[in-house]
Image (tube, rainbow, N blue to C red; front, side, top):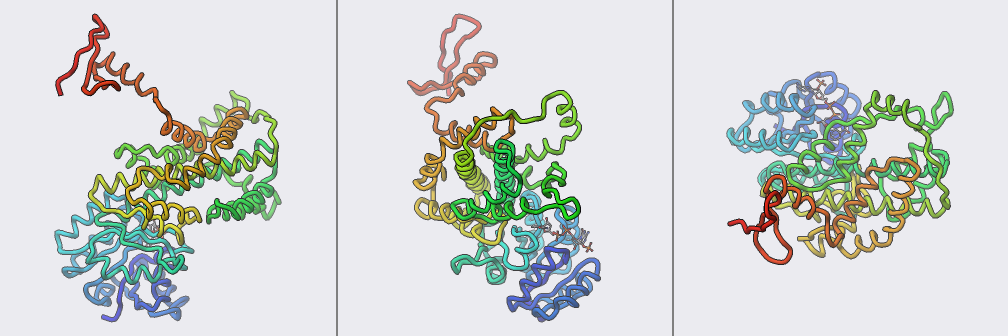
Length: 477
Ligand code: NBP
């Protein structure tokens, strides 16, 4: 055997990841179910490094040095199971199978247990950055055993994006930790994009400006603390016009956002963990709403569709939206990091949240300047209760809070939907409130279901005889 590593699944992602690995001086054996993809990879890019073409999984396995590292980069779900099941009988004890697709963390846990029975290591590896990232340097979140990372780490750290001399790849934790963190990354990506979309909608609808003018605003924002891949990309896509009609391209694209499921998975997991990821949840629901064509058609027929005009000062409104976007983004990330902390605790994974912020600074879709601030916050205080209250972010939110309120109020007045802005502001207000109306909920629960309550003035659990003499009894623990 001559190859350091093997890879099966040569669609866009696998093909680019294989080229990236070869370009970094590693000999890689490659395979694809349909041989034509393997042939074309070798023909078109065989000169970029040491690529070894193989025609079957048996040949692939035979080509890789032991203990073998075999990356599987096929469609998530059943195709991944089919490939992993076919690999197992061909492998030897200590070999490592790496699923680099977007797997659900529960699938990764299941596959890991299956392979463990055969003395094999299974790694769930989250790869972010799309096809460009896969080729030029993605952000890589690796789960699984130390043994697996000893073998895999040097390769992934060499091919990952590099920021300030540090690779955007790390051993996140054991088990499904890598795929869990990748799932939450994608959830944050949903929230980020929804906040951007709401900002665009507000600027365009309230100010009555063109997409190209909105693009200019985003470009300007990209020079400040919002600097990020997605803000820059927003300026680019909003400036684009349709080749045939010349209309803004954003107006010829159907307004129903699609989803592959990672946002939904994030929200489902957050519900189980009891973590309020309101930004991600609203972003996921906003995509669902956009796809409900029949209901939208029905509503448009009954209700006025035009936004109500609201008088605002243009420059001040632009700056308000910027501040609201930043504050809402801080909330979305704080919630996402809360979810990672909760997932780590529930599963017994020791995840270094500062390291997660570090590897998201480059390569991935949510890469942003402000991840440096998150990394610093965790460096100062590894067991942070919430990112929101750290000096830098607390100040950012305080600086922006009046803008945030004005934007949400203007949106409500003019009828522009801002589910992510609005829910982020409510989350902030909920956290900082001296007394929440949850006391009313406790009273109602005790009243109709004798669910009991606790008091602020003394310890213990109590019930009031609401239907009787209103006597309060203390309930034995
Ligand atoms: P796809 O998700 O479109 O999968 C296509 C690949 O799966 C092809 O190599 C295909 O082989 C193979 N495959 C299928 Br489908 N069924 C198979 C089976 N039963 N046995 C063997 N191979 C099978 O490819 P992709 O877009 O490159 O994504 C790969 C993975 O990376 C996915 O899990 C995806 O979620 C993840 N991911 C994608 C992106 C992105 O930007 N696209 C980003 C991050 C992660 P064939 O050539 O013979 O049909």
